[in-house]
Image 1 (cartoon, helix red, strand yellow):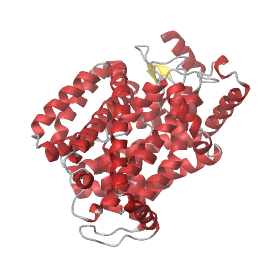
Image 2 (tube, rainbow, N blue to C red; image 1 turned 180 degrees about the horizontal axis):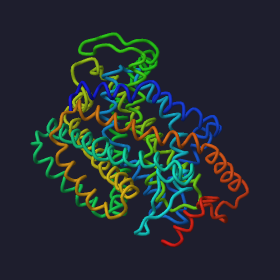
Image 3 (cartoon, rainbow, N blue to C red; image 1 turned 180 degrees about the vertical axis):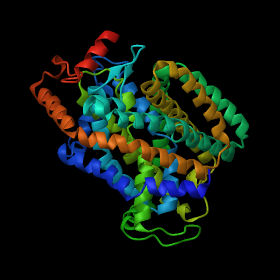
Length: 470
């Protein structure tokens, strides 16, 4: 497809209305929940490892979070941040923070609703996500909106975050770092993805729960080490981020300059690409968590945005600004690699390559599951095998596409997926508030584990379907 046409479609989809809807939904939920992302963050972080994993579900809360993080911590944290800073200047990082802060409330609501309105498929496996809380929460008359979300979800898995953007980044970084031929990369990656994804959620969650914590720690240590090496430049870099968020960034070197609106758009769009708050993807796997309380899983889900953007994207962004290389001609993975090599001349490219490959690989796995749940909603379990085969083929083909078209296409389908989900979050915000109050009331009374909070007051037909299938 013509790149110019793609850019026009992208500008329309990601115009002011969607940006206002994305951030506005987060602001609205933050206000209704009393800025829960601040007041309850310590408890949410504690639940990552202490959630009891009781109640119905297919996997633990920790594994559900790791699968969600596997899908969110990916090229957006390395390549996406680089493209945002390159396009919008350092100020884009600030708007990433703003979108992430309010996005934490959005992610909380998504996780809560996913558990409240989940059901089961014909195989007896948990089925949930926006398509279920749209249909079961808002009513059957809204099913067309749920179908639209599921169709967009399959497109994102096939042509957006799930395949092309990740594969392209892996090919790019392995070629830059060790000179590996794209053909070999494509073969190795395709075989690895096929080996894991054929096993379904349990296989993906098992791999994710091992790789995600390790890769996050490695990248955290590497970036913090870099910033400590150039600690004298960090305060100036932070001030540059804040200044450029509210004033145009002048052209310098290979940087063409950026308006405040461009910085805002780049930051919000790439932030959503990275942490997926409001996109509706994370609740698909959150629904599978073993928990009695929808609000408890909401808190666990909320930490994903905090870890992904507030921590990891910030470290990448500050590394790029401190390096000063964002003003040059480099972009994407090459820009981030060059910045790392300022601090680690010998090991820099290898550290970044390992981090990016692991980030991107686990994102592919997570999105394989998201797309699969969407196709099951649309066509039933009989569509799982054809879906997986097509997904694996697209992974193989993704190695040979150009970066610019990939990011634009990913942006477009992301936007299409977000719209129905955000409508549902606004419509069901009262349910979110009610469930939140109920959960924290029982915590204060000390009997939270004595009450089965799964699907409280949920649609009777969903409960009956679930009981019949287990």
